[in-house]
Length: 119
Image (tube, rainbow, N blue to C red; front, side):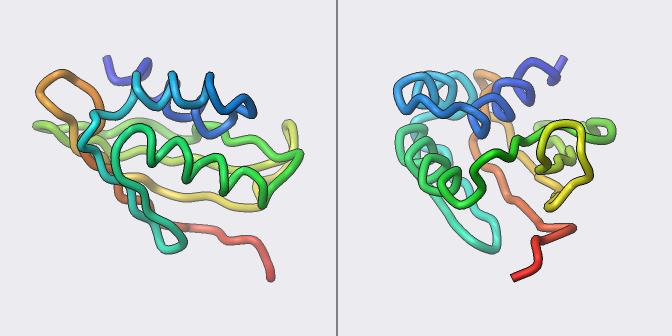
């Protein structure tokens, strides 16, 4: 049931076109949504789309992919992701905890880094 939402979220992180990324963010996030991880934060679908655009510039040639299974209970989701070049090994990975709004979109996403790139 939550697969489509998470797939839209991952597609948003992978979208190079700013207008398409904003449209995907509006599908995934409410206008009052918040996003926070150890490196960045954003507010609202438009703000989160802009934050993702800025983050994308830091990892050219890499793409996000889902990993593991989705855990869900009540209005909460937990899922994992990886950042890699193609089918190669992950250079970064994390776990996201998301709170759903009543309309089924993300109201809040909190990201944790499980694997970070070397500086």
